[in-house]
Length: 130
Image (cartoon, rainbow, N blue to C red; front, side, top):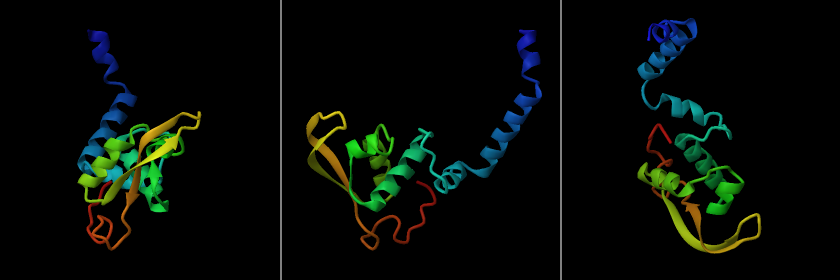
């Protein structure tokens, strides 16, 4: 037990604790806002997945298959739901689609984000986070 307590007082643990305190003091959403400036394909967090989906939808409609295989978002449906809860107007249309390995699916979600000016979250409301 004393060995564990001694290890908790190392310089690296102190630095970690100091960084954690700074992040908490900055507010819960500051990290997400900064993250949007540079999307990280290796970051599997929900906030990064939402940002990736938004960027993809800005280029045009995206299927679940495309979001998974081309953009690396393994669970697009809950992330799209979270975006809707934040005010983004994203419609779902069911389509036929094939995965890269050739498997055909009859009911795949095709997500379509309404353009600016259609009461979308990005058309003036400042939500601050994704």
